[in-house]
Image (cartoon, rainbow, N blue to C red; front, side):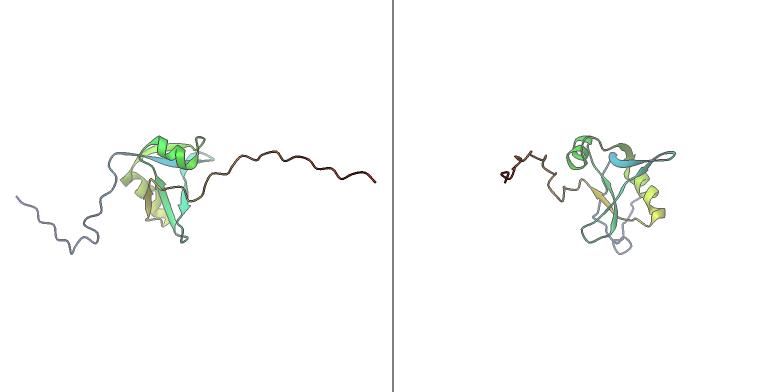
Length: 111
């Protein structure tokens, strides 16, 4: 039996989701953790995931908690919140803050 895909029925036939485990940033809540949601540059809400723990740490820092989820599970978690966008392996939008350098203390001469 041959299955025919009708591209008119599929709004985005060439779009493929990431395969396998995704590293999803989470935040602590009263009874466990919750998926962190982010904003796109134009203000829309998006779920964010990374393909490796190293990529997650590079963007969000070593202290960011995360959990492993498959793409369908992540989409199912955020859909009731009205979030349909999933961003995978986003690049940082700003440079990490530089450590503050101590400045010399300047004293005014006594009068």
